[in-house]
Structures are given as structure tokens and as C-alpha cells.
Length: 288
Image (cartoon, rainbow, N blue to C red):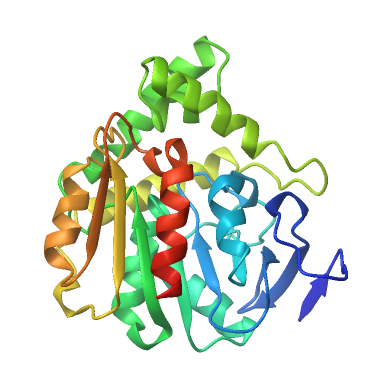
């Protein structure tokens, strides 16, 4: 069952204007947005910890949507999607599979960031035929070093942000130097471009359940990523405090033929800080 709140003529390539939809599958109603030209293989975006539809950077999405059909969605129990957040990454991957198949797609490309990259890895390991290409940004492999410490970092930076009345993402995603602080402000401003049909924030309980799932993922046995045959683009900043940058190198070693970009003087949100450099690389990778 699909509903479209804003049917508009013409191709929309601005995320701020992307129509909001819902789709019900497996007893869950998923909130999602889509934009860009229809036809061809869609690019499905897998969002980060605590992320909702409103947490995607137009500086990344808009250039990709200029040439590709783009779909963003709220995971089960997050934002405007119903149900409760699963306590494992595997279950999140199964939900993503249910959602994608309900949309009617047999092949997709994935653009993933942070927690979304963990979900994307589990999805492609379990359902390899579904995925053609994979973008893994600011993420790490199952069982990766210090992934189980994400909760501590998150709570520490949320406290710092609360005390200084700033958005936690300014601390979690960016270095606290002049370059990082400037990039953080610009990023937060871009996230506020959409002024209608904004999504609901994640609940505290849902956020805590996501953190438990990440901890479990970090303490699990590694997945067989060497089996992946999909072209894979891996990206991060050189100072990722959330998911240590060394884990991007680890992913690159494990996934044969993958490409790795590490941006200097940037953190977890390196792709957002350097979106003007990264977006064209992502577009070119997806178009190959």
C-alpha cells in the first residue's frame, strides 16, 4: 500500500522538495521520500544513528538525484515509520530488504553512512543479488575495533552539545578546529533547508535501542566480507571519533577491489564537510 502526500509534475531533484510517501509492508508503515529521474537502478540511502529523513545532506543527495532515482527512508520505529526499533543490525537489514522489495525493486545501489553502513553490510551479505553497487561512508565492519564504544562517545558529545546549546552532530561529525566548526555550521544549515513536512525526531528509547544494536555488532564475529563482489566505494575523514578511521582501511582490505578515500582534517562527517569534492566522486562511481 503506497500513499503520496505531494504528487507534483516534473522531476524533483531538490531534497528540500522531495515528496513524502508511506508504504506498508510486513506490518510496518515506512516513511520515505523519493526524488530524481525514475527508471534505471535506484540509489537507496541508509541513514546514521538517530537519523531520520531530515538528516540527509542536500549537498550530497541533490547532485546524485540530478542523475539517479533516489530513495531515503526511516528505519522501523524511527521518525515517522511505525513499529519499534530492532535490537540487532541483522533485523534492521531484514527490514530494509522488506521495504525495498515492497517498493518493487530487484536491484538497487546503496549509499550508506555510519550505522546505515553496518545495516548495508549485513543486507549485502545476506541478500547479495539485491545490491549492484555499495557506498560505505563513516562506517566499519562487524566486530570492528572499538565499534562497541560508540555509545560512550555519543553520550559524551550529546552532553557537550547540550551544555553549549549546539547540535550534537557538530561535535560527533566534525573536528573542533576552525575548519571543522565552520563546516559543522554550514552542514546544520543545509539540513534545515526543508521547511514543510519535516520528519519526527527519534525517540530516546529508539536511540538507546540503536546503540545496543551497534554494541552487539561491534562485539560480534566478523562477517565474510571477502565474498562481496559488488563495486564498493569507502569514504571517511582521517579523524573519525565515532567509528574509528582505521576501520575504513579495514573494510578496504576485506572487500576486494574496493576504492578508499580518506579526507584529511575531517572527522566522522568528512563526506559532509567536503561534500563539494565527494558528491562528484559518488556520482561518477554510481554512473560507471
